Length: 88
Image 1 (cartoon, rainbow, N blue to C red):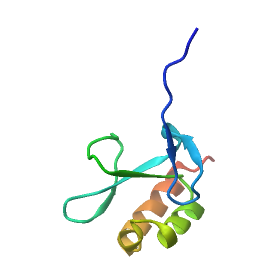
Image 2: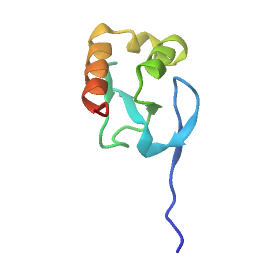
Image 3: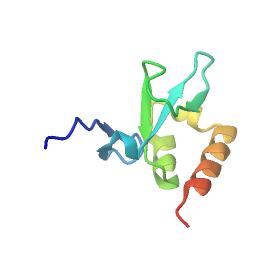
Protein backbone atom coordinates (compact mmCIF):
# COMPACT_ATOMS: atom_id res chain seq x y z
CA UNK A 1 0.00 0.00 0.00
CA UNK A 2 1.37 3.41 -0.98
CA UNK A 3 1.65 6.07 1.71
CA UNK A 4 0.75 9.72 1.26
CA UNK A 5 3.24 12.50 0.73
CA UNK A 6 5.26 13.50 3.82
CA UNK A 7 6.43 17.12 3.54
CA UNK A 8 10.10 17.68 4.39
CA UNK A 9 11.22 21.02 5.85
CA UNK A 10 14.58 22.43 6.94
CA UNK A 11 15.22 23.58 10.51
CA UNK A 12 16.51 27.18 10.56
CA UNK A 13 18.72 26.30 13.54
CA UNK A 14 20.61 23.11 12.66
CA UNK A 15 19.74 23.16 8.92
CA UNK A 16 18.77 19.47 9.00
CA UNK A 17 15.90 18.29 6.83
CA UNK A 18 13.11 16.60 8.79
CA UNK A 19 9.47 15.70 8.39
CA UNK A 20 7.22 18.72 8.83
CA UNK A 21 5.38 17.13 11.76
CA UNK A 22 8.67 16.86 13.72
CA UNK A 23 9.30 20.62 13.60
CA UNK A 24 7.70 23.70 15.12
CA UNK A 25 6.43 26.34 12.69
CA UNK A 26 7.32 29.96 13.44
CA UNK A 27 5.65 32.90 11.73
CA UNK A 28 6.02 36.64 11.72
CA UNK A 29 2.83 38.58 12.42
CA UNK A 30 2.10 41.78 10.49
CA UNK A 31 3.16 43.63 13.66
CA UNK A 32 6.60 41.99 13.48
CA UNK A 33 6.17 39.54 16.37
CA UNK A 34 7.22 35.90 16.13
CA UNK A 35 4.55 33.34 16.99
CA UNK A 36 4.40 29.57 17.11
CA UNK A 37 1.70 28.50 14.67
CA UNK A 38 0.02 25.23 15.60
CA UNK A 39 -2.30 25.24 12.57
CA UNK A 40 0.47 25.54 9.97
CA UNK A 41 -0.13 27.51 6.84
CA UNK A 42 -2.07 30.45 8.24
CA UNK A 43 0.51 32.83 6.78
CA UNK A 44 2.46 32.48 3.56
CA UNK A 45 5.88 32.91 5.19
CA UNK A 46 6.82 30.44 7.88
CA UNK A 47 10.03 29.04 9.31
CA UNK A 48 10.59 25.64 10.88
CA UNK A 49 12.62 24.84 13.97
CA UNK A 50 13.46 21.63 15.84
CA UNK A 51 11.87 21.58 19.31
CA UNK A 52 15.24 21.87 21.10
CA UNK A 53 16.97 24.75 22.85
CA UNK A 54 20.14 23.99 20.90
CA UNK A 55 18.42 24.61 17.56
CA UNK A 56 16.70 27.69 18.94
CA UNK A 57 20.09 29.10 20.04
CA UNK A 58 21.63 28.41 16.63
CA UNK A 59 18.62 30.01 14.92
CA UNK A 60 19.11 33.14 17.02
CA UNK A 61 22.65 33.42 15.67
CA UNK A 62 22.11 32.76 11.96
CA UNK A 63 18.44 33.10 11.08
CA UNK A 64 16.59 35.67 9.02
CA UNK A 65 14.47 35.97 12.15
CA UNK A 66 17.51 36.58 14.34
CA UNK A 67 16.50 40.07 15.40
CA UNK A 68 12.99 38.98 16.38
CA UNK A 69 14.08 35.72 17.97
CA UNK A 70 16.32 37.61 20.39
CA UNK A 71 13.26 38.94 22.17
CA UNK A 72 13.28 37.77 25.77
CA UNK A 73 9.50 37.24 25.86
CA UNK A 74 9.56 34.88 22.88
CA UNK A 75 12.59 33.02 24.26
CA UNK A 76 10.88 32.43 27.62
CA UNK A 77 7.63 31.24 26.04
CA UNK A 78 9.55 28.91 23.70
CA UNK A 79 11.62 27.51 26.58
CA UNK A 80 8.45 26.97 28.64
CA UNK A 81 6.79 25.13 25.76
CA UNK A 82 9.80 22.85 25.33
CA UNK A 83 9.84 21.98 29.03
CA UNK A 84 6.12 21.10 28.90
CA UNK A 85 6.57 18.87 25.83
CA UNK A 86 9.73 17.14 27.07
CA UNK A 87 9.30 13.38 27.54
CA UNK A 88 9.20 12.38 31.17
